[in-house]
Image 1 (spheres, helix red, strand yellow):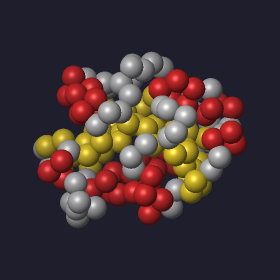
Image 2: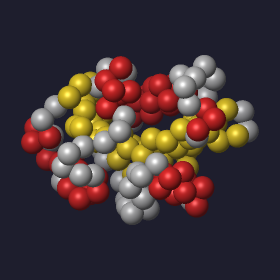
Image 3: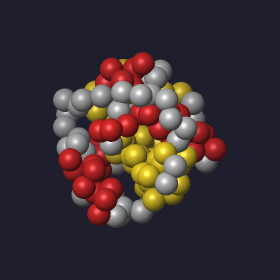
Image 4: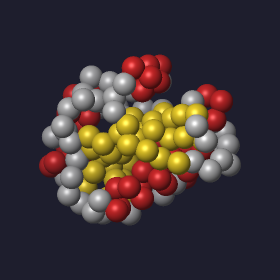
Amino acid sequence: MTTLSITPAVANEQMIRALAAEGLPVEDLAEEGRSFFAFHDGPQWIGFGGIEGDGPDRILRSLVISGTARGKGTGAEAVALLESEARRDGAARLHLLTTTAGDFFRKLGYRDCPRDEAPERVASSREFAALCPASADYLVKRL
């Protein structure tokens, strides 16, 4: 496992390319209410992730780890850093949708939940309402 650092990030070309390459939504990255972060191993970026919303319920979104850093615990470390950021900012729960990484997030304590049980602020987000397919797994973790 590496020792990651996390820094605030803006939606730049590098982030957009990395997210798009993994099939993650990029259409709304610049909209208000989203905080994005870059993960670094020393001076080199190795991934990006975001938190959307305010209040007790937030959306963990747009997590991507570069191919060379995968399989080393880096993704789990990145999620822990995002969870710490959310908790520090007052979040009590993180919600997410995924079509490919459900098992990964379940191993980190995220639990399946019926999508129609999402809080209104989460359910009405672009991520839930339009960007992710209805077939995506909906997972929640209490922080």
